[in-house]
Length: 373
Picture (spheres, helix red, strand yellow):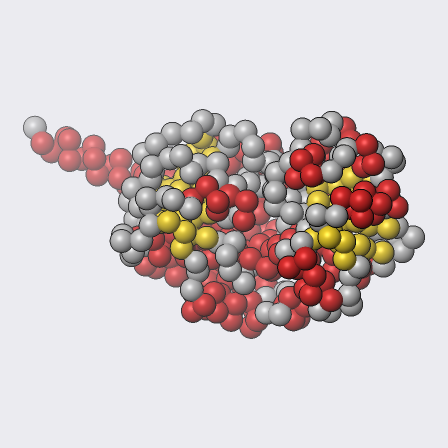
């Protein structure tokens, strides 16, 4: 009586393995068809490593990275490494509807509501910080990491790394220019840009705008003032974020305004709204709505969502693949450190291993010097 049951289980396992192999093959084929090898050298190396070692065999991972076709590079190594990956598709995270349809067609699991039962959570803007995974979390963004300060489980802080500067500075600056073009906007020398924030994202945006020829002023805290003087494209005029009069005056002389503070609603809370609505082009490049509830969606390009998320590829894969690989490496780190809790900073050794690959094989190798890598 046991033979038919054993045969049934064997056949189901065999079918499962074949389906898994076919899915991995389709994901890999997509990347190979749409990108050059030098666009994703780190992911290619991680894919080969995880595929051979299977560090996530039998584990369930919730993947909350914004769902676009280049996100394939994020979860391909996880699936090849043995994980059962579920893609999170809930309100609050930008996505490409065409990708969702394609993903489900090839058999990927897509969750439209929150749920428990995961071993690891690969999170974005802290949307899943209320879940209870067996081992822990890896958070992608600066704005999301604050949700994990007192977490009983470890949370790998992907943003707290030098690697994230590739995506934040180089990639987001590039995405801003491409996003503006999608809305019929060009960056020109006659424009006066006011940039809120000069961190990882803001510095890249400012460098890209200035390199393109625009005039750029920056609103920041006094502690960041020196940073504005030491960039590869020269110094930026500084405006103290606490000086409301000076900020309002800068807003009124600006033709374009872009927010890159990583703080939701900061403009509505800090400054009067009226000066921002005098014909300037308003743009957000942060992960959350930085203008806030006092601004109608129609007042900001792309309805207050980060402008690069209007693109089919918000950040070119060549700029984001190292960040993807670092977050994946963080998920594996958690498995080997069950004693950890709270926020975990990526080690220099882990980062250098990934950066070495980009320096040797990456299409952006020559650009790394612009951000000190």
